[in-house]
Length: 238
Image (tube, rainbow, N blue to C red):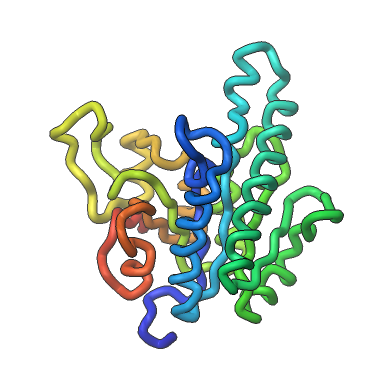
């Protein structure tokens, strides 16, 4: 435990991490791969909290394009995050990692309500916690939920899991000459209007001096290597 850079982390990932072909649905093999990454970090003695999105099952923006009321569309997305959390919990439990799901809205038959001190206690006892339901409010993304929970749970870092290895000054999918950053300040991120995270999440982290690391979740041992002190991805900090 003394060899790790961070003792408590908040890992934020999109629901697409669990998706199969077409980035839709829950693919058991993908869920198993995600669980293995989490288990490898947990086995280092690191306390782990996860916030997961629901984009593999529902995107509120699609609903609003067809006239759905925004709050309703967002509430459906919150329920989708619970489905993803339960799927990931099942895989983690079967791999030997004791896991608890907590939700931002009450759904007691299948998950605990989010209670900050209980969540911290779970982590102190060596359990992984998965925090579903976003912030419990419409109009807020799961990025914002991840930032909020990272602060509430006194995490050492917020890790944003993506499919790219860093933050770039332009879209690397469209511009092959885009330059990656090793480190960038909150203000620089906001002024460049980069879209890797939403501005509300970054602003909240800036106000509370919570470092953010954006990395490629699917690069071999990327999260583990970060925890062990390597420079991985892009760090957003003061």
